[in-house]
Length: 336
Ligand SMILES: Cc1ncc(C[n+]2csc(CCOP(=O)(O)OP(=O)(O)O)c2C)c(N)n1
Ligand SMILES: [Mg+2]
Image (cartoon, rainbow, N blue to C red; front, side, top):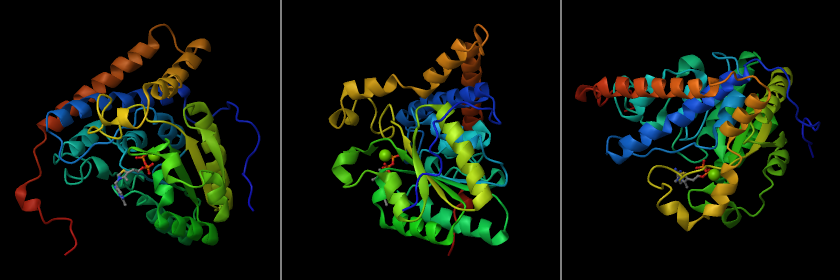
């Protein structure tokens, strides 16, 4: 049985992106939630919007280690985080969520189908487990071309019970494809707790069973995520073989804006549980770290927050000024 690729303790080391930049990115991702919530409540967002509060470190810490363009990213419907992390213009992200023609998918994809192929972001996916078979195709293309690029594929703990995910893991292990599988274990699939859906919750062992090495990482600590990602991605570039992360994490609020903190989620988890995880907030944790280290000058963290808010306000203004896609574009970009 393959064993974890790296077993030494995680420590902080020089990575390519400054921790301050990671902090700013995580704050931007978090700040993006508020107007989405507001616009959803106002009925301005068609379909659904999923939240990522609490899970920002997994996106920022890994994507900061990629070469873009070159490498590839695929993910679930919690995708505004990935889009912002690859550097997609926040205005184009917000416009897509609001279904406007200035959106990164022309306003026809909506919140679950953000995409930016020029930056290697091959999109979000509304199908649970959906990105995983696609990652196998991308991994195969990288291998076929013979370069050392990497495909990062995000999916949830609930997706690990999908047959297609296991078929895909088997193929990645068999053909040795350069994919970093990132399971975001936030303990719930909508309102269903992990222990009610999964007979064997040792996900790394399940990846091992398909011939893929992996490890469990504290997904609430961006420094640990970044360190683990750096090692794993370097390993994939060198060997061309897949690797698997189980990211231990939690979403602080509801599954999406239809399940907010005042409604549905109280039926499936306790306030105490949520409060305990909030103490591990990855943004506050990094802020405390940078303040203790003296990396932040006085007021700098607040300046970063104000800047993120300005950028998000500008994104909303751009999105709202962008027209809806014209009616005669209805049949564009579809297979018939
Ligand atoms: C194939 C499929 N079945 C069901 C759904 C409805 N659905 C949307 S999200 C979700 C839960 C998925 O949970 P998980 O994989 O843990 O990801 P998380 O939402 O926690 O990030 C379900 C069942 C879907 N989108 N696709
Ligand atoms: Mg989940």
